[in-house]
Image (cartoon, rainbow, N blue to C red):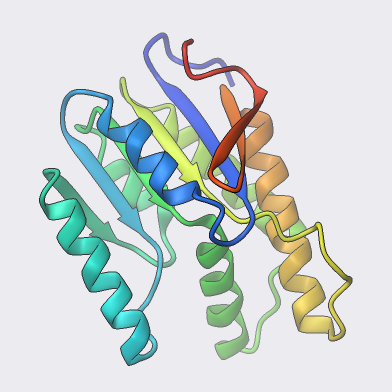
Length: 188
């Protein structure tokens, strides 16, 4: 896929609480024009609802348009074509949501399906003249999970991360709030 002259895909990964989301928002707010935040996290309990509400309020002060879409990232990206920057937070929850929906339907999600979905997502990113920023967790740096579902989840996220990072113009890994540039750099 050849990037359009003014399309840009930034992939930001790191561990939990490494500063990924704050860094991604800082990068996004440095871009002038319409901003869209694609939130993939469903509300599943009261504590999570409070977290989401705090995030919504913070973004409201910065003129973000929010699309809450737990499953269909291609649709969310197509619905935000008019934005100068789109921030998708986060791919880890997107994969979780896909896995949960499949289990409810008594189906299985495979790495091949995730790879295909990521190809579609990447193609949707390249539509229009905009920057799309993805946030994800790096789960493959710990112990091998003890149960099959957890191992599948880790594998699917690894597949997703590799697929989108390979298509990104810039790949950033956050450690303790500090960005390490693995591909490209923020001055491109």
